[in-house]
Image (cartoon, rainbow, N blue to C red; front, side, top):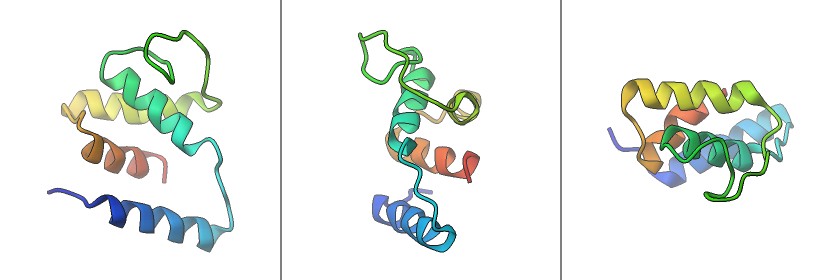
Length: 86
């Protein structure tokens, strides 16, 4: 099943509007988690060793789920990331 990026964006926007909670670190956490799952390490930008995330569990859980399922494509990874952090 392939998930459209617009659907994911809309769901995230609706969730933020419903809960009135804006998580400013969301993309940073997503990118660190994706880099970890794809073998680049726990970094925001590949090649730069800087601690970028503020929520270890929200980075490690989606990365672990991605590795366990073999799911490393961007669209699929976004789905597992949103599911694990919901």
